[in-house]
Length: 253
Length: 220
Image 1 (tube, helix red, strand yellow):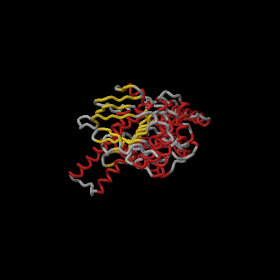
Image 2 (cartoon, rainbow over the protein chains, first blue to last red; image 1 turned 90 degrees about the vertical axis):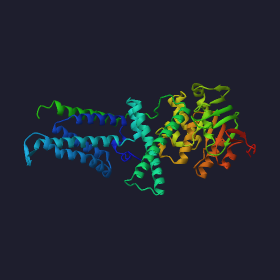
Image 3 (cartoon, rainbow over the protein chains, first blue to last red; image 1 turned 180 degrees about the vertical axis):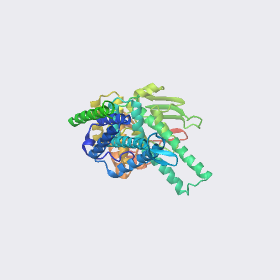
Image 4 (tube, rainbow over the protein chains, first blue to last red; image 1 turned 60 degrees about the vertical axis):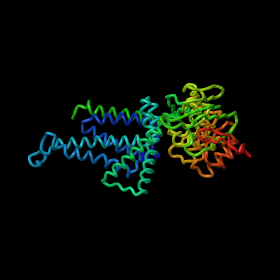
């Protein structure tokens, strides 16, 4: 199933209240994303690595996720020294390659990795349905939550439907080529998926109506805020406050 | 429940039903048989007001029903089990899906949790509460769908091919469950054995009308 690579596990991080984790992930990301000071970013990255270790995230999928993100970041970081004014490190032809640019690139890399690690450690360790429940307890717009939960519920089904159709095409000898026939057939495939999804959505609405749906969803799950969650919440406040102080109030640069 | 002279056609298509009459009394179990595409599912959808007849009347619980609001009133009393369980189970967890109907009926959270527990237990599904609906097997999905319908304590059950695509054991389980239920039922199926075990009379849907089966009562 999609998006469920990390949720299994039983670390302290896994057992935290999803509401606390969601708030912490958002607060940390907001502070780090707006930060520009190198020491603050180094501290944030160190914290993020520590959290990822505490969550015991599986190495393979984590590296793959980081590699995907860093491919973009490294490209940007490699090109930034050309466009950032400052002291030239080397000259490439007549264009300076600046130290300031390299520092800026490193900052962006630190920032991005810190956020990805924290979000992965905190949010990927929550089962997606529980995340939806947490969002609803935090009074986030219910339309947003139900859009997310319905998507999770039906994206898999659509995926299966796509595979069934694609297999049916294959057994009748369909091979994708750069021909008009291919484009037309693929167009039919996508069109059929859309039509089927629409039909299905109508049937789901009918099924919901039969059970007296009146526009409201109810949440059964209730979370218990344990002592460790309180500790985690206090830590979150201290860490974000610390980062903010480092960013805006610390006198030495 | 009574249908008299019901006509129905989907927009711009030739009529599916033309002058269909049907009657279901308390505790009665009727099988509706007919070729695929003859309008059996349409018939069930008309019975709960998901579709509106172009002519004729539908009486439910002693009153003719025409408007959506008149049907909405009795939705909880007529339980429709859909052909595809995937359409019926849309909540993340089993407990939430089963509780959805009772909560819509205005039950309190604690009552709903109790109904969920009781309904699942009666179907031999205890312990399924926190299971994620999309991880269930085909048979489990069908049984949970039945639980979501039964949780609303309907007086009439409309079952649209409840055993299609299921293995013998699950079919056996469904037969055992259905034979112990007190509700009146309308059952659509192509499996003759199954119909013989759960229904008493047969109605044929052919030539856009409903005619009583020649076989008469089929119950042992």
